[in-house]
Length: 211
View 1 (cartoon, rainbow, N blue to C red):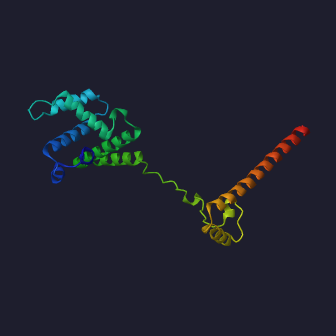
View 2: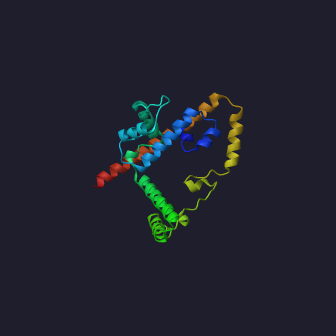
View 3: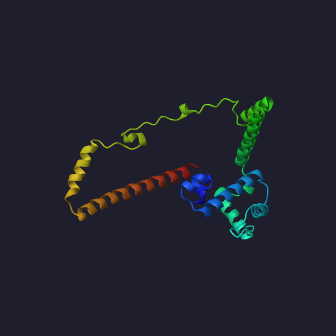
């Protein structure tokens, strides 16, 4: 509720049929958030003092400290802890300050200030520098193929015929027949593995004899 409506105007909130109490709190949160942006180095207790000094409850008394801290907790959840500002946030804030000064210079028709601020804005955002090439030409060309030898496998001759033969063989057979064939395959694999182990042992022994 608060996250999606925090930046909406009062008219937009009313159009969405948000209740009055929620609207008042959203407007308060937005004001406190803007105060935090203007004063990012203040402590939470100072923000709480601001809330209590500016806002009252339905009884006409200043908001309680508990209510003010509830607002701070909600704001931290929505926009993060501004006391842990990142460099990106400071960049955004600097741009905002330049734009505020630019708007003021326009109202005062101060051509010198307008030109200076425009130059600072362009320099800070690197608008005076040419963009580097993206290097799209360095992306390797992707080639699709159905040739398994591309992946280092040995192709099976007449693979389609082999597939058809296996389908015909096992379509109407029993599990015992399949298991029997599987055992044969496993035995052959075990023999091949044992041969490889013996070959490595012989090679290792020969290397030791030479040394």
